[in-house]
Image 1: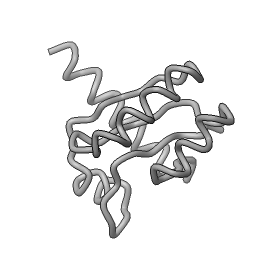
Image 2: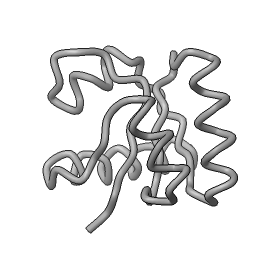
Image 3: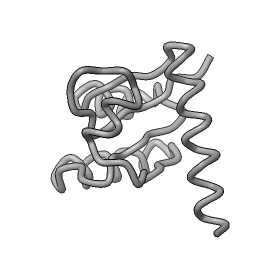
Image 4: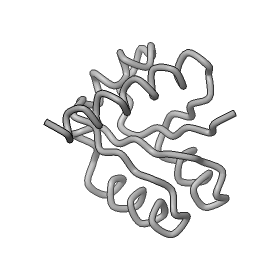
Length: 95
């Protein structure tokens, strides 16, 4: 139950970030910004490809950026972000 509430909180935060336009979408961009320590948080779709997942997890750990694994698939995450394509990984830049 606590984990479910945490994910709901994360989704609400992500919704605000989408509305504010402070998200970056895509594996290459997220990895680049993780290497530059330019992200505040990273979100992964439930069915993110394994290679991309391991790369993002590695660089997020190095940059000490929180990583959230969502219960949404990449298709659902794309719809959630109001994109007309699948989204496997995204990051938030903050204010």
